[in-house]
Image (cartoon, rainbow, N blue to C red; front, side, top):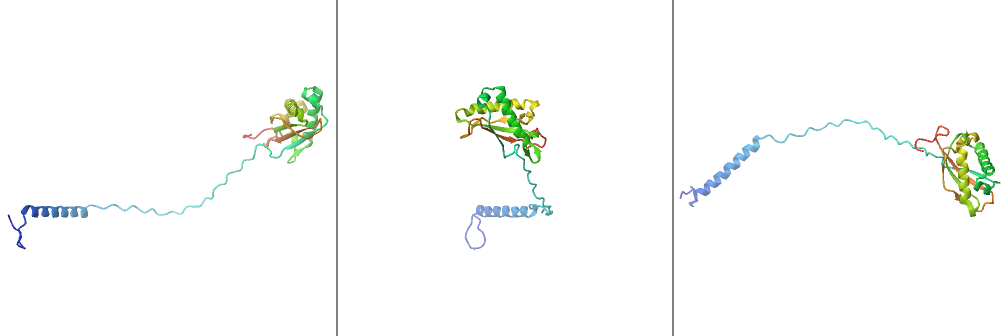
Length: 192
C-alpha cells in the first residue's frame, strides 16, 4: 500500500483515485456551465396606447304587434243567426265591425289602412259563447277575403280561440284586435 503524505495514516490508493475522479468531473461540469450560453431574455413588448371604443348598444327590436289592443263591442246582433251562418246576421256583424274599424286611428293613420295581426273573439252568452266566438271568427275570416267590404284589415290575421265574456246581455259580443306594427300598411314586419 502506498501511503499519502501527511498524518501518518495509510489510505488505500483506490480511495484517493475515486476522490480525484470526482473532483475532475466537478471541474469539467463547471467549465461546461460557464462556457454555455444562458437562456436569452425575452424581448419586452413596448405597450402601445389603444383608443377606447365604447360598446355599441344593441338596437331594440320593435314588437311585431301593437301591445295595446283595439276593443270593438258589437251590440244588437242576431247571435243565433250568426251561429247558423245566416247571411243577414253575418253581414250585419261584418258591417258593424267595419264601421268601428274605419272610425278608429293609430298614430294619425286610419286603422282600416293597417292590418289586424291577432284577433280574440269574446262570445257574450256563457251558454254558447264558444259557438258564438267561432261564428265571429268565421265571419271575420270571410270579411278578410272580401275586398269589396274593405276587409283587407283582416287579411293577414291570426285568430285566438274564442273566450267567454261574462255577464253581458244577449246579442252583445266583443272583439280585441292587435294590429301589426309594420311600417308599410297591411304588411307585417319581417319577424311578424
